[in-house]
Length: 467
Image (cartoon, rainbow, N blue to C red):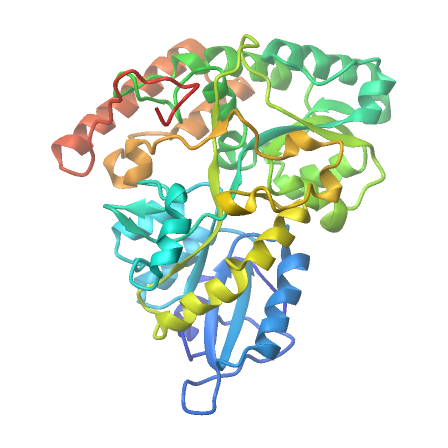
């Protein structure tokens, strides 16, 4: 039973029975009704919400098979939200309802925010000693754990990569992907200058959502260049957006001089992927876990494409952060948390699932004892940069990642402000200084209010963020 749910209107959500284990689902229709109830002989329904859709053709058959074959009386109601996932969670939690399991993919925003609200339960109580030992290398404060309590297991990891059309590169006489931001601008300009008449442009970005676009791109570029994480410098314990300057300037050139694909300011990621699959975009930046599989199932293409490491500001490479991917959190409203945990183990954390998901090219496995047991994904043969590498590492959590309420900024957030600079509607130098000042003021206020703390790491090394 496959559901693609759009944004739930507040009224519809309030009227729906967002019951947890044993009680229905959202106020949406589906091709088959989920079993209801928890009485003897009846199914226990585990409602799962996810914002992932790129892997639906892989996961849904496995969920369907589990629903047919498990002997524990469990039915998994797997629901995919296409838009405003966080808004749907907010509305559900405000009525003390919602799903039983919530998927975490990429950024940890829905983790720290709702853990601090008490919406999820720690899985430590359900894990065996063997599981705790096996997954201990994946435990990271502010990423999947808070105050020493573990809430999900990030069996996969993801980060940003440059996706490029090799056929377009060859047609334009370009030898390979850019190593620096300046080279990326030059490469994009060459493509646009030569192929604009055919409707082909050198670069695109999904700037309809500045946070979605820039979290997967400029943040990683700055980290990889030796800069801060999301503007936060662990060496000084303060925000400093000055290192974004060169990257913002290059993006500004791309987007204000006619190099970029037209209409990027209103472009979402799937329409962008559609244009890339049609051979109309030379390069773009996205998640390593999501986009390879997209061109096999969601938007099949005959274009010759490849994956490259992100360019840096000056060509020197430090490291970039890995975002945890494909974990599931048990909500406090779940009436059968043991069965929800069983679903996680039997389906999503099972070795068979993890290996198959990796080998399908949907993400990179991070479980230590499985790394040498998985095969290279067929779709990434010749595209090995799509896998996690030596310069992809876990970074510490910033004060804002640990608690979004610790850094409440007046005015536009960093991504809205950076997008304005990139699109030319805000000056870069003064804009970055104002961003630095506003974020540090917000951090100091959060510290005084007891909501956050300064995180300063002695001998901080962006090439070796774990020490």
